[in-house]
Length: 87
Image 1 (cartoon, rainbow, N blue to C red):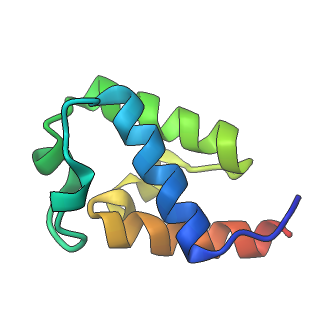
Image 2: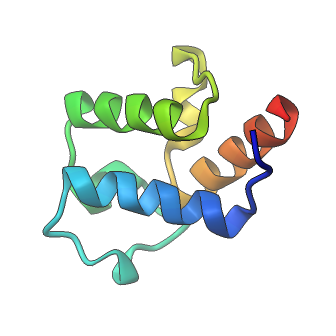
């Protein structure tokens, strides 16, 4: 597994969400505001995003940690920690 930068992880998160909500302008997403509200996805789409992130990054994301994925910054922080510990 190759090490991922925060920028790589952020791009993967945005690409993943863009595949689910292509109508969203991700340039306008506030990194510290609730992501699901901004992207307007339901819990099923959120779960699909988590599955895709798991597949792309190769990290386990337990349901107990879903709250840490509430914002874009929180998601990137969480995944950066998980990716660095998986190396």
